[in-house]
Amino acid sequence: MHPSPQPLKVAVVGAGVAGLTAARELRRQGLEVVIFEKTDHIGGTWKYDPNIDSDPIGLDPNREVVPTSLYHSLRTNLPRQLMGFVDYPFPKRDGGDMRTFPGHEEVLWFLNKFADEFALRGLVRFGTEVVRVERVGGRNDSWVVESRMMNDSLSEEIFEAVVVCSGHFTQPRLPTIPGIEKWPGYQIHSHNYRVPEPFRGQIVVVIGFASSAFDISREIAKVAKEVHIASRSSDIKVMKLESHNNMWQHKMVKGVSEDSLVAFDDGSSVYADVILYCTGYKYHYPFLRTNGIVTIEDNCVGPLYKHVFPPALAPWLSFIGIPEKDIIFQTTELQCKWVARVLSRKVLLPAEKEMMAYVEEYYQQMEKNGFPKHMTHHLHFKEIEYGNWLAAEVGLPPLEDWKEEMYLECIRSMFGMQDNYRDQWSDAHWNAIIKDASLSNNSPKVKKWLDGIATGALHRKIKDESQSTTSYTFQLEKCLHQ
Image 1 (cartoon, helix red, strand yellow):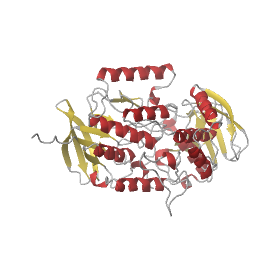
Image 2 (cartoon, one colour):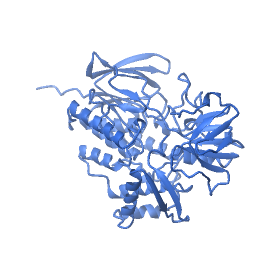
Image 3 (cartoon, one colour):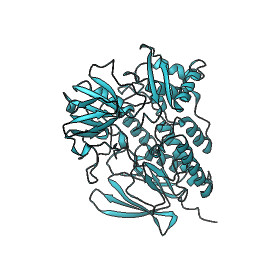
Image 4 (spheres, helix red, strand yellow):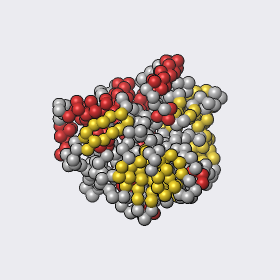
């Protein structure tokens, strides 16, 4: 009688959404799991902290880093119906935040509930920071994980596989601005924005055009003297916003000077007190040592097959949660299911050469379509296609029609940039989408709209149920992301 083989031992770095989901799926496949978490809690970036980094723009490599980018008023960008898991939806609860787009506290509650439901907390080594992940003797299936405890003691442990789930919302990404070294005003990245009060009575320039810039600029406008929003978009209309008497939209910042002047590409300028960067984040894995096999260049982590596996190290090293502009909980769960099934030998990966060929073709297609390298992991409105591919790999059916329709409806609302886009419809509206996923009239229009913006500039009138018809102009990705 042969003894049962020992289960594969897998290290998971991080106990946020990705780490908890990975742990659940790995354990479901009979693997031994250890989660390393440097803080004393689960939830990752969804755990609010009023404190900020010692360097508000993140240039000092020795700064004290606060492991969250939440601002106090932050709400989800997607409805709760899209923020649950396949078999574990995000419910409403008595005494909780009942809104369809809830605040961050409710998401943290849900993650704690998820961890307790699946007994994941016992897998976590809290207060344990991973400082080194490296192959042992050049073997792909043997990795040393060196970690530091809160008392600064170090320890090493060997694992067959490592799943990196450490997130990418703590290392600010900043644009290059001529003259910024001598500009005397206050600079801060949205990673360190918490509440608007520090900006009372000031003239603030917000750089960015994605959801954080949208939310923060409008919140600051309630207390600031003036708010000027700068975007790289070549199609943005330079104007004073009709809905706010102290907000202006500009093209990108051209340069700044010692007298506090901020000049924009559209020829306008303003003497500002603050520049607030809503310009995204850099991928950052200081603990990972692969002898150059995996690199980060211009915010491209690579090479990665399907944003998850480095072909030369697959399946023993994997990354969860790298894609941006996606249905994050769904994408994370499907990636985790894929990794778990691959490691348990229930799903096979292509040969290394095939995976590398796919990566090279992906890079070439991005270049052909005019997307810069730092957008490598932006899904470019192929979120549904990517999710359905992952689902097929693990034997699940495609994304439900109602989820796709709800997601497309949210995208339409976000691009409309109405101040109340999260609350412009009641639950009855979303329930109608779920009950009638076909939406024979609206669905083709929404998809046609998305097809239009995916090709570049789009001029379209979007009729909001509670607002007048307004003309919006967008250039996908090139204007949304700095």
